Image (cartoon, rainbow, N blue to C red):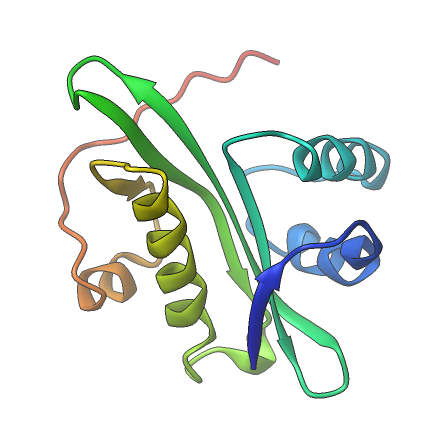
Length: 140
């Protein structure tokens, strides 16, 4: 397995993973295409994929880094990490998260954080702490 930066041509293989991500939103292909192109060119954004033999993409991670006052500089946030059902429990998620951690550390981030409703035990096994309650307010 190879974890590598996503390329524009990976969109067709990443789209099914995005589509199956979760019940909170209903991603639409047109918006995905626009966002995919934008994120691939956005500074302080990580889009990486997990590729197995035969150039099949079986997972991805999307993360951002931003400056803060409280942390005395940058912090990083994982927006999405997704692994195909067929490749779960084989270390793909762990590799994607390690890649994101290394990426964040290279940028001098004080920490890497994320929100998760269903995968808490996975993140605890990786050494993450349950540190806060996540709130959101739909704007559309």
